[in-house]
Amino acid sequence: MSLWLRGVPTGTFAAVTPVRRCSRTACGRAAVATLTYVYADSTAVVGPLATYAEPHSYDLCEDHAAKLTAPRGWEVVRLEVDTAAATPSSDDLEALANAVREAARPAPAPPPPNATGRRGHLRVLRSDS
Image (cartoon, rainbow, N blue to C red; front, top):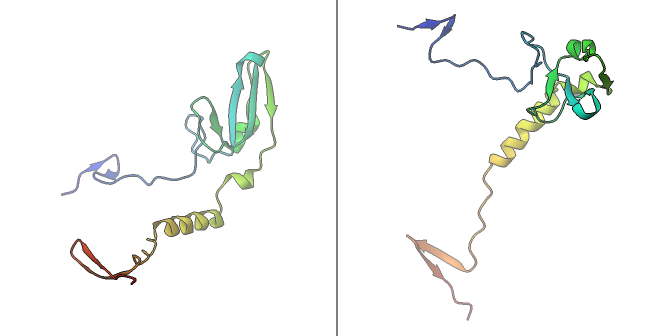
């Protein structure tokens, strides 16, 4: 007998996506820009998507990045965002998969020098003389 919890069978997990999502509530679109603040200068900076998600920055989708407003007295600095480069392409994913396969492939062990045979944990060596 299978139990269902809100339409998802128990014992299963939702698919995890490598794409970062917009930080705005109820927005599930892919993030293309990062919002950071410079409190000392009363400035909000919207720029390209950061390489890593930082705790004091916010990822925004294209719409929310374009419509962002700052509090009165603050300045918004907008850096050019290339939305095509923000989403991973199939070439990026294929290169990542190939790198993982290459790293997981065991390297062939070179034969020990002067070894003629092996018996258990002991090794028989030839003398060079």
